[in-house]
Length: 284
Image (cartoon, rainbow, N blue to C red; front, side, top):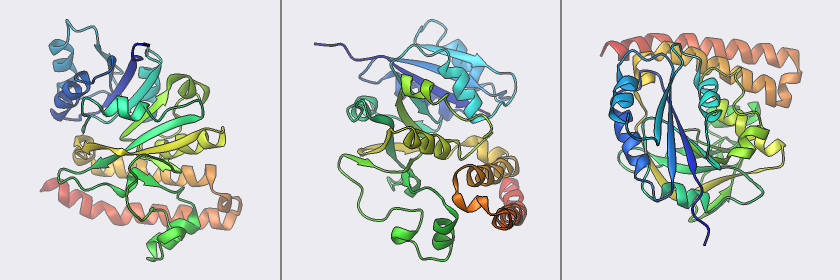
């Protein structure tokens, strides 16, 4: 009988808060062999250092210090470069896995699989629609905004599957990949500083002939964490930039210069409109 493969778990921090300790503890309780590579993007909250001290005698955990915020994708790539496992699990620091989460996700991996995602849920157990989505092409985005979703929109309606379902996009809060596939795709595109890098990775995996699967039978608690709350405008600015970058890279509509200009203007306007509310919520 073959022994379970080592899974390398990469967790990126950026002032992500004390919830990270619980995330690491849950991951270490997995029923498969794991190593955890915590990559810190210049945090000031002391969490990376506390993890370093807490697990100084545990060879399964190591902390990599970037000393600056390199962005999510670049940080994952640096962690993955140190990975020794056959599988790579990218995990948000506000996600809690169960002991069998990784093994159940890995059960869906075959030679055609590029990425496996899970159903991420809030504290009340409600699934996040972003767990499975279609590519946010302009026509789909407009249909969703105008309330004409269904098969024409981004979100996928209907019940969550009991097993694996082939989809276009899974949530980057937790993704499992064969490490060889990650390397063949050259990891995350580092042009994306924050947000949309998971959508880009899913698209490139599919373009390369791999399947993107949602493990509908796996639920993961997602806390929607600290970095966004501390720096809402910073995060929003990069999110909007990444939305436009994804559009330029993958949407056929971007070939039209007029459409491209209109989309850029719309995204910038949306970012500016959001700022007052974000600053108000931060003060509260």
